[in-house]
Image (cartoon, rainbow, N blue to C red; front, side):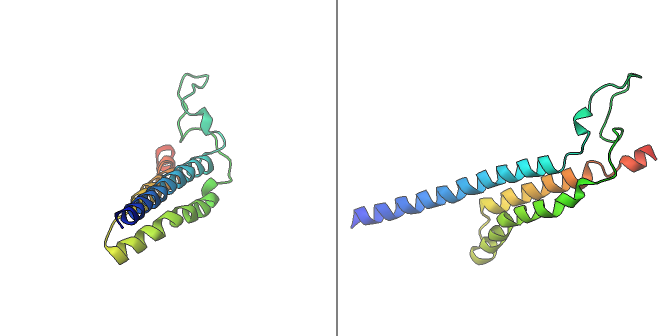
Amino acid sequence: MDEDRMNGSRRKAIVRLAKITFAILYSLVCTAVILLFSEGDYEWMVGQRKPDGSVLTLCTISTSTDSTSDMAIPTLVLIAVLFVPGVIRLITRWQVGPSLFLSLGLLALWIYRFFIRAAFCESVLG
């Protein structure tokens, strides 16, 4: 009887660890997707010096007219895969799980990479 209870608790611990591991690996994949899809065509040039000696910044590099913001929605859907189960767990059990923390961190990264980091470039160059 004690052996069955021990196996059950081990099984629960293994399942819990597998869920956390999956959430962490999934968030790492989402981070890579966000970083890849939010990068501009000439962003690799940031930090290099122009012939006049000035340093290229995100606001001063030449960009194409095609924006990468069209990739924002598909990456947001990837974040929702972690966010929705986290919110459901919060509502049903009143527990904040790791998926909610990871999804909120990914959401902050998503907002920064797609919208905030170049938001003020026009007013600076204006």
